[in-house]
Length: 190
Ligand code: AMP
Image (cartoon, rainbow, N blue to C red; front, side, top):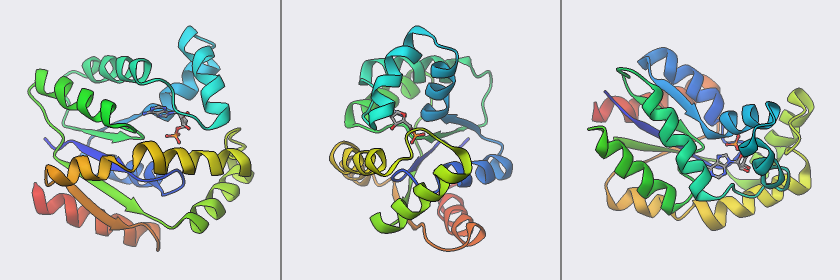
């Protein structure tokens, strides 16, 4: 079993690479952004609360996202491993992930960090807006999401570096080249 945190700013290609990783390693994909968008669409209590944060590009409060994540992990019977995509985004979330995996006899094995410059991210996200019409892919919200990422999420690199789990990957290039760089890092530890 291998549990991967796929880390990187909005637009770094986490969703695209997750799909390929699931196929290769048979892992369970957990994207908190996807779960939250489904909650918004279903107009659940959590969805209604989350929408206000998501529309502005702010993070949903830790307690809500952590509860949601832990429930999702526990739903899985006999998993081969997980890819966490878009989670954790704060140190509190990383600590909660560690302790809930420990309770289940698991751990995060590697944090693959997709590294992409800000200008390239903005270009990609504006392009995605045209293709998917995601409501939080407007220039103003994109810039806020990137600022929120730098402020609240980047410190997680140090969290995983200290545990020797940080694996940086150049996130610019063809999808297949980036995928190869990622699998080289995963195969080196498993
Ligand atoms: P994403 O699809 O991962 O870019 O997430 C879209 C939006 O969902 C983010 O801008 C946040 O508002 C919210 N979100 C997703 N994951 C988290 C998380 N782990 N913690 C807090 N908010 C989150």
